[in-house]
Image (cartoon, rainbow, N blue to C red; front, side, top):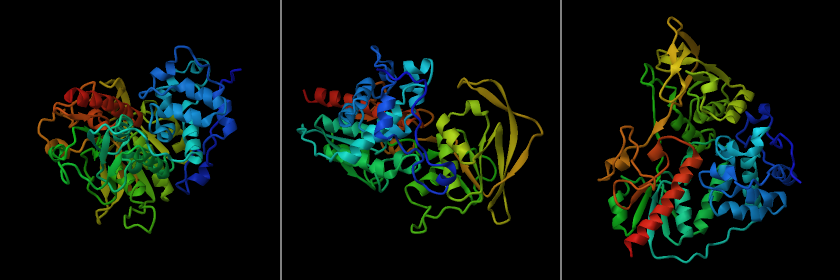
Length: 463
């Protein structure tokens, strides 16, 4: 019998006062009994609206039915037929605006906790199952994947399951892309990402780190090595700044640099030679998930005061509601309707304050959100010693500048059609390098589409 509770089974979490002293995961995950209880809230709808809301088309009712029955490994096998990164998706996917937003249970209460159940199933599998080497027969064709973020890993995994010999080229010393350098440990443990990468390697995927495509190798040289197709999933790692006075002061970071130093290069530990400023008061400029990640990281690094400075109201914030909620619990102060105009420094060229102007909301702009308008004579200062700019990123131009025949937009994004094919034959692209900064699951969807298109391209080419 279906569990008709209007509310999800609560997710156990670390206490806010405790978690700001460590980098351990905030959400602790369901127990087996919690997972089964939540799974019985699913009505197993005939038309399955939740599946249509999932960019990788996970068979959601099928796996949830197995969870309800206590068949957790079977649930994992169902998920993994379409999603090669379930432990990641269960933690950072924006389910509330995708699969869960379509859930019928959400009409008169809370939707089924699809993401929480996916996380539980993936974690159960990792804890109980042994990695099994793939027995898929190789088809003799080679494909290169540039970038080991969510789009690249998904494309590589799907192609490997089809029998392709896949090599992933990663610029950093660890695979995972934004999953390892951009998302903090307390939201996505790096051991989880490593395990997902190992699962792909068990399928026969080769991962080559410290390869900067455009420098170490070019796209043309990859083709010359015998690869028949290339997928570019190198993301959007070039940070944006506001162009205001004081951005060159000591103590101003892009969120990209700040989080990379902490997440991937372990700047929080004296054992590693990647220091980061010992901040007491931090202003994080922006209102997205990256801004929340940077602010919550600063708190864990010991900052006494951490501010989110955002030019619109909280209602317009693009960050997940859960991340905003957690940030507030952890003592982050929200200074909405404020926009930086300059960063002020000491005689030693270090940050001492950020000057902001108060804003009000006017008519909607092209994004549909009400446009922020400065209020005259409302300038005021916030005393800080560190400023983190989390206002977006764009693709690094290295690959397009070293590759002939790749069309790009004025924003520097590669142009790809609905099949992820670029203007150069044999080269496909997807994820943030095409869309600009977006979500993990949308990047995965692009990688999945590209794998299907690459398979069709190579088969047609070899007829």
